[in-house]
Length: 365
Image 1 (cartoon, one colour):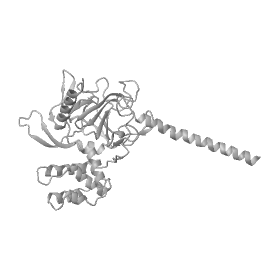
Image 2 (cartoon, rainbow, N blue to C red):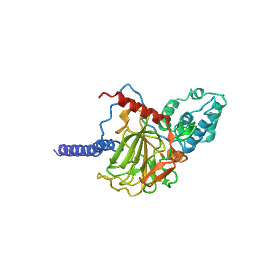
Image 3 (cartoon, helix red, strand yellow):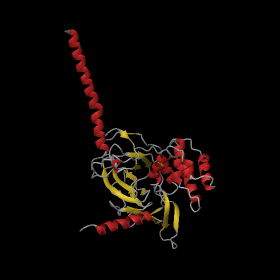
Image 4 (cartoon, rainbow, N blue to C red):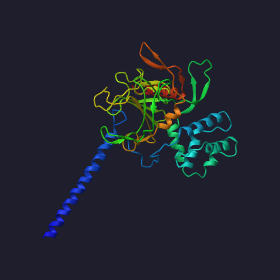
């Protein structure tokens, strides 16, 4: 009887151990999925649509392009823009992405120069250079999803000639003249609510520092979130990028003209730096350090918008690249608002507003 009783005891202990493992790992995983679905997005959350079974789209992007590489590629794009051998700067980066396996830590400007010179000197074409690159198409699509709205045509508002400009039309999220510090903190640990990774980039500064729209787009969410405090979510017009600006100022977090569904132009003042968040109660300063949490989510399919399939990328190198283009602002003492000094006219904004007006007109009454 003793061996039989011993086996029974061992079996019971194994079953108990298995139950502990299930409760410890599986149940919290489901809870975390539910919480993360509501973290940086709109308060009127619904379950994300299921991805179409016959659609193939990118499931993950690890963006490791350095600011030096981005700047070199951008300069080649500018140089070649009005020639008969134009160069898309993102395509240049994608060629090196395929060459480096996506890791630019050992980036050499000579590698990019060799590619650009062949195209500029008409020794080869981009198609010929990438014909045998197995992963070029992946990096090309992924990097265009990150950088697709950064360079293009625009006009300077108020200019007599209304001459079309071409160049960098994306801005640093921190207004010109306002100091800030930052470091590469993507993926570091966070514990409020539940243990998770930091899926953004913190830029430390002063209360009330004007926060700038990096890219033109439309306001997808606006309001309070227990993690991000007062926050703004702006979607690019091509719907590939979702910009997340969080921990905005107590009592006066946003530009008064901001509203959900409304368009913003790159370089506009959209809000003000603060330290709200980490509270279920609205308008509470529970963040120790004054800073902007700046995040960028990539969306290749709407099923990726919320939940475990979200793709957030590191913005540290992006912020360094964009620091060359900071929106200059001035304060209106009558309203206490900061406004940009140099307005631009972005064709993408005009097209969005035209389409929105058309949709409103055609909507059945």
